[in-house]
Image 1 (cartoon, rainbow, N blue to C red):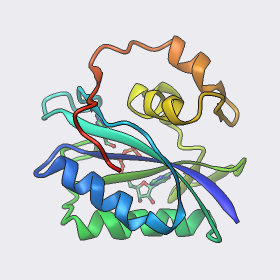
Image 2: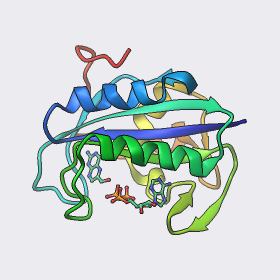
Image 3: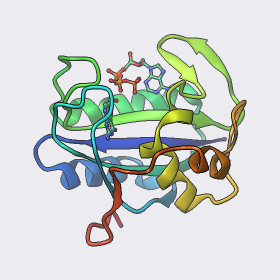
Length: 160
Ligand SMILES: Nc1ncnc2c1ncn2[C@@H]1O[C@H](COP(=O)(O)OP(=O)(O)OP(=O)(O)O)[C@@H](O)[C@H]1O
Ligand SMILES: Nc1nc2c(c(=O)[nH]1)N=C(CO)CN2
């Protein structure tokens, strides 16, 4: 049994529909679903805004199973891999799995970008106010040090 925090995002096509498909894909393991945020793109800034959310999941699956399930859902969304950090129908990142650390490039844990990404930490904080990013500290403290401009909660959109 493991518990994982997943970051989901979309900025191409039916963004909310793709996020809902990700939620459906983890329905049996869902512990919590965050609000939806509309977020300005980081990395490659010349692309459309994303919708981002965070899922907490738990079940009889290991770290690689969470990754593979996420990749299956990305593929099912018709995701085409072009540019790094470029537009995508669905992205599923494994942020943490319990206290597991991994330096395998195919599954880096905790996700190395998470500590700097308001698009991950802000929705995570909504569902787990006491969350800790292993090795980096309390999510609330990390969020306090970030620029939250361009991260707007969309209470008119729901994943549940
Ligand atoms: N924690 C992780 N979650 C998801 N994919 C990971 C993780 N660690 C490594 N990877 C690998 O990253 C690759 C997918 O990268 P992808 O193209 O989705 O990156 P990205 O989402 O554009 O960038 P970033 O990884 O910075 O969020 C896959 O090969 C996957 O195996
Ligand atoms: N706002 C936002 N920007 C991004 C995102 C994302 O999920 N949200 N994902 C990216 C590639 O992983 C690149 N840029």
